[in-house]
Amino acid sequence: MAGRGSAGNDVMGAGGMSRVLGKPNDPSRPGDLRAILFDLDGTLLDSFESHLAIYRSTLAAFGIDLSAAAFREHYSPDWNDFYRSVGLSAEHWDAASASWLREASAHRPRPFPGVVATLRRLRARFQLGLVTSGSRSRVAADLERCGIVSFLAVIVTADDVKKPKPAPEGLHTALRSLGIPARQALYVGDTEPDYEFARAAGVEFVGVVSGFSRPRTDEPYVQLAAVTDLPAFLEIG
Image (cartoon, rainbow, N blue to C red; front, side, top):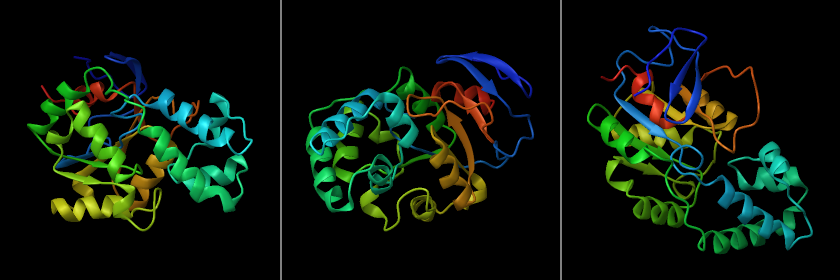
């Protein structure tokens, strides 16, 4: 298991080298932490390549070519924001979303290595949950197939909220279900919208690196190489 370094140090974890910015009293590590809530895609699920392929196929039908760099640059958990950003006319958004769901049903992304064991370890200490912008049907299938669903006390999907990320409704919904205040929760995600989502909800945030992450050196939050580094960061023996 990776060890935790002091502020600014690098620590080798299961996913490689992770930048640990926190200190023992860092606010990203709530002292009375009771719940850890996770994003799904790029955080627990190794789905970047699948999503890139799905979006490429979807947008190609509307004459839009999508590179990996453009996908990463324009990516948003709000599908309509993404469509707008890549230049798809609003009149095509519903058709594009329907196409996306059809394409997604043929893909079977797997959890990142070590995720299942990490969730098992964390569940012994905390309540765990999932708050994602994915559709309920797709998320349910992924969780069941990957053996993750049994670790989660609450699951909130795009179909359970009126306003998608980064609006805080999803996190508020999960916290109400758990009966836990925001100050006793941590959200783990892989993109800047995930950070904005947590901040809007008043929940501390820890980031992990993924294919969805935009290259940056000035993240205003702790960033680990992978979810498997989380027990060491939280100093779980």
